[in-house]
Length: 420
Ligand code: HAM
Image (tube, rainbow, N blue to C red; front, top):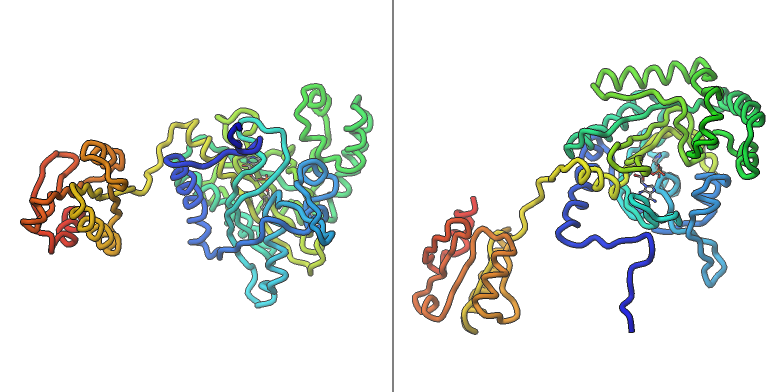
């Protein structure tokens, strides 16, 4: 029988690389936590309707990429393709917005699922860290989120992340722009599918990657020229705050995101070293989403950064993250009596906060020392019958090779001192 393999478009996180993923999650979350964002966790699946209404009936995510299932009871569920709709649903359901302390600021981290054609940087199961600020319309809040994401990339040591910025307008000006764009697009030479898209979601046509389409889009009307005064002023303030914070951005009037809920501020972080899947993170304002899923008016803004692609970006730039130390101390017992004694010492060391490991499986001293080497421990504790008779443990410095006999009854304190 052949062994079962992971499904297409997925991969496993295994040591030692998995430590990098944890460090990236932590580095992205840290700035948000420091800025008052509280942790939120929502289920891995939701009612299909949440995403079809929230993300949008005409988006690729909903029409092609959602993993849906019908329960035995007949309920239609979907594995979450993104986090924003879920987080907003959870906040509304938990009445966080009624506590009178707006904006409600939340961060999250987890797995997301999209049935996409897998390729480098594009998976069917991937990982995001996100932040959402619910219930405030304030350009400084948009700026805060963008600054937090930029600071996270900076803290990771990434140098080649670019920030693309746009405004998609609001209920007042977007429809006017949409109509102007439709007029323009209807005059182009496009295939049947794209013609249909013009009627349902014309802004997405701007995002068409095909050269034959892009060539025709050269003279397309730009949202920037159609923003109403309120949106223009709002966007100007966001830009001002970014500039004041030293966050470089590029205006990209063609930036359209793949989700329908966006209004006003939209942005994407892209990295040059990732090939076609260059977006490492993205987000924007979604003032109408709450109403779309049956809630009150709750203007909000947020982002999600892709953990997988951020790791790829680090690799592309050759950045080595400082990872937390693994094992500090490794115990190598010689004989049955020493196994019992050193196992007790290891337990005591761990309880005292020292990262300690043990040569399990009763291996010979040669193999046990190999394990000690591989563990990266700074010190190895070795004890045999003679050491036990003298009530000592040999402490070997793995760097210098020097070995000292340390009294067994003071071993924990002595090791802590050596490590300090
Ligand atoms: P998104 O642009 O669809 O936005 O996804 C955000 C990030 O998730 C992308 O920039 C990318 O790094 C990563 N990502 C998306 N799909 C894949 C995939 N198939 N494989 C690997 N990585 C992927 C959202 O999800 C919005 N909820 C962001 C947001 C939050 N907007 C407002 N608040």
